[in-house]
Structure formats: structure tokens, C-alpha cells
Amino acid sequence: MSNDISSQDLANLIFENGDVYSKAELAEFAKEAVKRLYFDFRDYGENISQVKCTKELIEKMKEHKDYYRFDKNIDTISIPYAEAKRTLNTDIGTLVEVKLSIMFYDNSSNNEEVVSEDDRYWNDSWYIYLKPDVSKNDCTCAKCGANMKFDEAKDMLECDYCGNKVINAVMNKWRFIDIKVEK
Image (cartoon, rainbow, N blue to C red; front, side, top):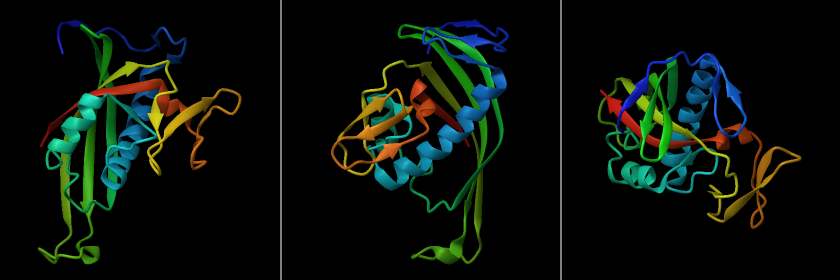
């Protein structure tokens, strides 16, 4: 990422796709999207249908599973804090940086390989970098890997192959460009 262009007020964040997001709405979107991203990636690998990511980010997550805690048997994620912090001007356009405080919980009683009898907790700060994305037709289905198509009338994505549907299409208005983790 390059050149911090401002720490401007994100109260009415307006992008070329015509959607308006308040700072609070963007933070709430980020909370939900990160939870879905975490469990989709952990459970389905690169076939993430509900949250758009760049191919580079998916490769990075595959290569560094421990960095994102995908190698843990996490049972619950809680995100008590999320804030749209700033916009960044990059060579691929304007990105929004959102900071999240994420609490991971692992109930050790449901692990196949018990390392410890104690439950485990982790708390990380994730900085996600989002870009508005108007293209809704390049998602892949988490169930079968086929391309999904956006049905504007229903505001959902549908898989022509297996029939999987993603109702919350707002997830597909933003693309995850990068995630940085502070442990």
C-alpha cells in the first residue's frame, strides 16, 4: 500500500458503485465479512463464495495459515471493535483500511488431538484493506467451485451448477485486497 491520502472523515463514504456507507456501517460490514471469511476459508479453502478476495490474498492465506490462525481449531470468533480508519491511494485505486480487534476461542474438549486440557484464547488486531467492487459475477461457489451469477432482482448470488445461493449480496460489494495481522 502506498501514500496515505487522508485521515478524512469517513462519515459518508461514497464510491463509484453508488453505495453510501457511514463509518459505522462499514465497520459492521467488516465484522461480519471477516467472520465469514475466516470460517469459509478454514472450512472450504480457496472456494470462498460469500466474501470476495483477490487471488493474491487467497494465495497469501493458503501459504501462511498460521499467521491468520487457520491452523487452529477455532470454535468462536468475537469482534468487539471495528473502525474504518483511513483511505489509502494505491496503484490499484482507493482502498479503505478497517481495524478490527478479533478474539479467537478454542474449546479444547472438542479437539481430536488434545495438546492441553485448557481452553485457549487469542486476541489479534487485523487491518483489512477493502476496495469497492461492482463486479458481482466473478465469485466461486464454496460448495462446488463453479462460478456464481448475480441475480439483481433477488439481490443474491446463485450457482448454476449445484444451486447454492448466497443471499447477503452486500458481501460482494467490497473486495478484500490485503489483511495484516498484529498478534
